[in-house]
Length: 298
Length: 312
Image 1: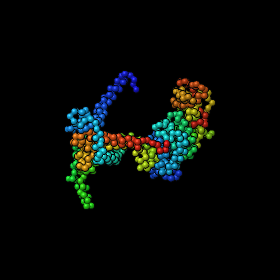
Image 2: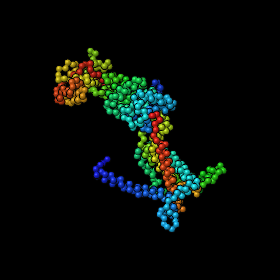
Image 3: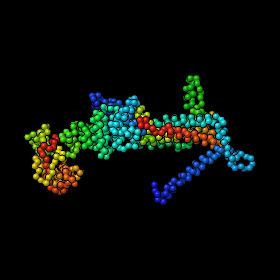
Image 4: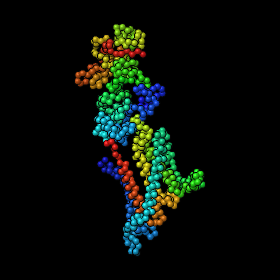
């Protein structure tokens, strides 16, 4: 690009601040977490010193935290359950968001901004308040639970508790993350050339084929973006299960939070965070591999 | 309406005697080549071409063979595995054509398909289209605003105005014997000289043009004395000289403008009655053959067989 001194200066002055910021607040903490995973816990939380303090306390590096993780199926189970919840939430978000995004993209141009505003409007109020609102909606006194249990009673079943259940957790997760699926899908679908749909129809594609052979494959970048924006936050989310879930609905996010704030076992919390990160990266790699472009008639 | 994206207010759309007005676009035996090509960006050239076959549920082996065959027809075999963004405009055009032809529709609708190509490529594609049409034997309906394209490519031309067919004829008849003012003016350049029929005699018409006098024109077999209309005269039928033209119709005038386009020069000559008439002079000698300058007094003329009288 610009080889002049001013050009280089301008380039650095633009790229340096964000680079420094990321080094300081992303790379450094990640390295600290990585290191913490190999340390002993401190006596009153925090971490034990690396150097020998000379008073017989635990110090230095260890693999014990990893050994502990693999010693009990419970942790793997929580991790797996978290992945399942994240996958379910992502899938439900996708199914619900796609028609919404499609309708917004197909509506008259002057309506679109308003509709997009409506999608992001919930962000204007506090996240916790909105999740607590679901406690009331799903609570046993509310009409929804009464209706469900009244219906079940007809068949001699129930009553069931909607609140403090995996169902409530899933509802909360989907509710919180739906806009993150709608927006990337909308930005993708909005760019589609309507002529392609006309062409597909002209060439003999019926309504379903037009969607499945043209719209859907062209929207995959939006689908993947939305899936990532839902799946990964849901994996780490602890507030929703804390508020809406029961005692048996612990997810990996809750477990990690508890290690740091409850049990005060920072090294084990770090191990959990690292395992989670590695699992997500492996999954992302797998997704990228599965979605690689390939031609069938080439 | 032919493709099925718009519905007719009234009437029928007949293809081989079968009314298609109520058949949805995807079930008509008609394919369209759009001006924008509208190739599917997520599919390769071969997958694009195979698309209609897959939609029709053809067996994979047959689809493969037909795709390869059609790609050969448009000389695109080598690009089968490329994606649309990797090929040129002319190649995209040929992919769109192949895709429209691959499952042998009864009719191929081409909606200004050459509009986005540069001149050289467009002429090459015209030749290509004529060849393709001859090889596959499918009826092409070619929508265009470029009249030379229409004249060059068609067996029959329908000149339309506001959704109404003004004239349906062979290209040479559309050009030489336009039915009305609109057709004469729309197809190619044309001098339209207002004139009334003064007499019908000697297998020809004697026209009276205001300010010019008498013009001899060929008979059209339908105009009678007293009819009003225009004489449609192509610029290449009009001769221009410094004077002394031995032609039935000749009028003095002044050169007002000229346009040099290489093979010919078009002169705009103002007749003494104030009307402008265009004359084409071929540039047979090399170099810029400019015979007349703006302001020169000249004589324009045409034989009595030239032109075509159009009754209003």
